[in-house]
Amino acid sequence: MVSLEKELQGNTYPGRGIVIGRSRDGKHAVIGYFIMGRSENSRNRVFVKEPDGIRTEAFDPAKLTDPSLIIYHPVRRLGRGFIVTNGDQTDTVRDFLEKGLPFEQALRTREFEPDGPNWTPRISGLLSPDGSYKLSILKSADAQGSACARYTFEYPGIKGTGHFLHTYAHDGNPIPSFEGEPTAVSLEDYACINCFTNALWDNLNADNRVSLYTCWIDLETGEFTEKIVNKNQ
Image (cartoon, rainbow, N blue to C red):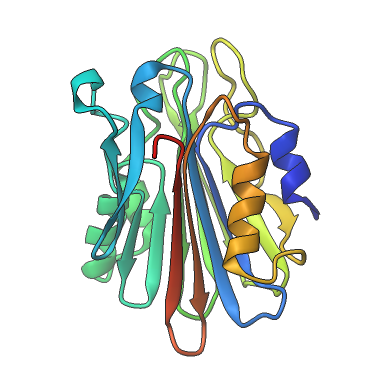
């Protein structure tokens, strides 16, 4: 495992990122989701709470130019489970799960974002009520965006451990996609959601960070606590 804070400090532009794992006492599931931006359109966003999760919203509607890839529901709750993604595939996953169809089947109907030459990967996570979780990345199989490679990783949920998946390996032009398995990160240092939230926000690049969502879920009762941090508020 590596330090989550050092992993964030060493990357000025991981893009959008998902962290899922279990608290150090093993009693809580842990979720983190953040967005970053380089363009005015990407930076002009905030997270807003919804009855079943959160959505992105333009901070200044007058500056919104293209909502297609930046306005969506990153988090939706389904029963005692949580869906976390970096795009409108959140709704695709929810619709399939409601029909009793698996996470993987839902994502076979989607592919990376049509924003060549970056071909930004679609990253998705599914937290189950027992604390186990899945992470998926859909990414371009070549520089031309001619085909989609699909990877899904499944984890049992081990106390003090999480996994971190993000869209970009680092900043660049075009921006290189994340490669390999989600990074195993230690959650041992975080005794509460406030510690976890502060650690993520404080170590994201201050120029590029936009919004952060965190959630701690009591695995016995299903009760949860959520936090939102918006740079624009």
